[in-house]
Length: 506
Image (tube, rainbow, N blue to C red):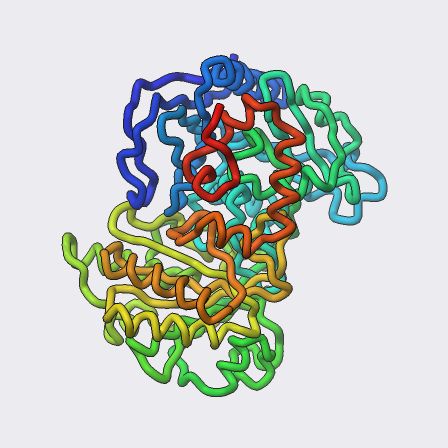
């Protein structure tokens, strides 16, 4: 039988060591039943979680499901509560097309049921070996899919939403006696057989789907998700150091790529990233561009999960390599460092899952990210450069990636065309000051922005309310309608209490 196993641990630290030694009441691990994966055993797993939820409600103990504990922020922390580690619960199933409603508008053969602890890396390897692919992911592959979804982790494909945009439905455990299969009423997916096999009740509700999609753990335990996939494809990536011309700036600011002189000419990229840092390499940008191509049958699927110079998200890798080269120190990120680490390459073809790094070093790095309307990209970068000047040079740098408005009331990428401006660096006092100054100056200058839920942030109850407005009110109202008073407390956290999203009162 599936079970939760208790460990008498008193302190919790996240993966990247940016949140350390949080006092907890213990840690549980969710383990599947022995034997082969099956939907019936998935139902047993959900029941095991619900037993634990019942105990938490009876004892007034907060409980937080944690995937890879990947967030730089306190999003996964649960001071004084119980951690529920889900990484061992990582089964995957292809949903038969016959179980999909007749008028479903997407590929009915491409739906995959993912258990709560599946990592993005595991999902990529499962899919691509079977001729399918995710359309987008975040910067790394080490997160669990559910954790990335629940914090609204942004994607990195310019015409796609964040990672949660690929979710068709999900299984939510909001109480000891509630097991819900949640689909949007406006786009139903399954015919009910899957939910029945999972022991769940089908709930088709646009409001609940939109609220709990980026639920921050506050709606209950997401036990499984049904993910839309696409036929696998190749990403042809190139990178070069370019003069920061008006044409490149126009592309960065959403003005189009036709005149930018990119490797694909006037063809629209699938992926576009610019690393632009006046304090390091004035007048230049490191531009990475990727184009989607049809799959080639001789393409080898060899996942180098520790490749530190992959064509994916390079800036965090630069920081990681610096830490490896200078252990115990905080060296500056210089022009020479960027030139060495961000070497040019041309027309490198890989699958989507092969194009991004599995992990970054656990210790010493810190990342923040703000999302702004793409037409304000250059304004935001100028403000960040001025913030750098105010605090003095610190071991940090800036990069821009792109996505479109994403589903979920509390989606971080909420502008029609969104630029994600990353601030990555070595975790020093100066780097943290830069992150705080940058956000303060964006607020002062009136640049519309949101902060990444899962990265180092300066969020307050006021800033969250200003950023999300009516969507925040709808999120909170939907949560209140779903949960009883005990569950409202159990699924809260100190992080969410501070932001006014949950209450510390039992």
